[in-house]
Image 1 (cartoon, rainbow, N blue to C red):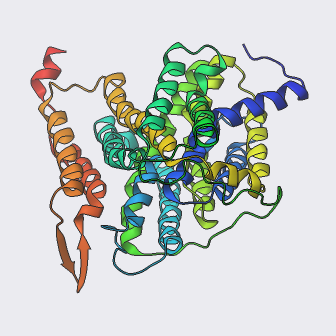
Image 2 (image 1 turned 30 degrees about the horizontal axis):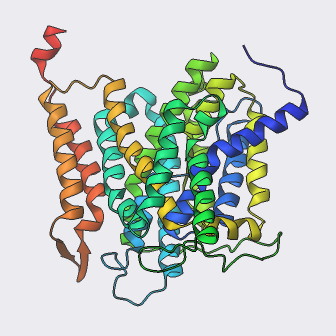
Amino acid sequence: MQFQLSNGKRALMGLQHLFAMFGATILVPLLTGLSVQVTLLAVGIGTILFHLIAGPKKAPPVFLGSSFAFMVGIRLITDAEAGPFAGTGMEMTEKLAYATGGIMVAGVLYLLLALLIKLVGIKSFMKCLPTVVTAPTVILIGIMLAPFAINQSANNLFLAIVTMAIIIAFSVWGKGMTKIIPILLGIAGAYIISLIMHFGFQMTNADGSAILNFGEAGRAFIGLPPLMLPRFNLLSILIMLPFALATIAEHIGDMVILSRISGRDYIHDPGLVRTLCGDGVATIIGGAIGGPATTTYSENVGVVTITKVFDPRVLQLAGIYAVLLGFSPLFASLIYSIPDAIIGGASFILYGMIASVGIRNLVDEKVNLADMKNCIIISVMLVIGLGLRFGNPITIAIHNTDLPLDRLGVVIAVIVGILLNIILPADKSLKQEE
């Protein structure tokens, strides 16, 4: 049953969706160096464009937040010690520009896959990209982010542990809205404690630095976000492309869940072709203005599941709110004052959750691990992705250009996984038993 909402209630519901996506969305710029203002502008515009492309009245009730999957690619590209631009003296903003260029091209992949689905149908498409390939990709993304969570937490383990404890408490024992936004509550709670430590007890981080830094505070309340033009580099593009497969799988999963709980078949009306195009255009726009890739947010799907409000106008209002916040430099400066250790503590949960989602996908889709084909695909993908990333660096020369394979671990793992899925036969004895 769908509730009829007045304009006032619709506006409040939009705010609830804004808060639901907020904690995770702002973490991406805080963890990668992208602008908080531009990120909010990108996800707001992206959400509005998604609904316009899918159809304002029949669009699925989703919000497009900043993607954690692509964050691995951004971190790999901007890594000062082992990234493709290490040792070049390139500024961080320039590296980020190449990362956003890769994001734009990854957005084009959405459009190409939407065209493929249009031509061959969703069932044939999913045979080439089954759960046994997409789930290990998601697991790899979560595990590869783990070192970054440790590094950010190291300077103040107390704050990191407090953040993690609050998030866990609300995730497990929270009720109503508090259970939906545990990340936001964990960051806010730990931030209050950091204020007490900083001003009440004059405590410092392990390296002697101040716990809080308000160096950017005092800016104007309203101002233009610092937009950034993308740059393009083949290696950066290759690093980014495979992460689109993970977010596309997430997109399809969210459409299935929403169809199930709403009684509407979003897979066919407005259809995956239109929703994937909307998600792809949103990602392209995000990269074009210096923002992150976008993805359908499970946090907001959770809100819809609880409230049973499927009115897409509620999510469109949330997109408008995000755009408005993107024009507030003062708001962004307050976000930047959050200590790294707090973000690191939240990342312990978030990064682990990414890997856990991949494992849950294997369970939910009943991937048969007694089938040697499935075991081989998963095993080879995990070893390639993690081995290339954390093992001794391997470089191959192509036309006098050195190509570092450790930056392309996920790319190679996905390609090998797809090929193995096509080439290897399923275990016929298991089919006979069934």
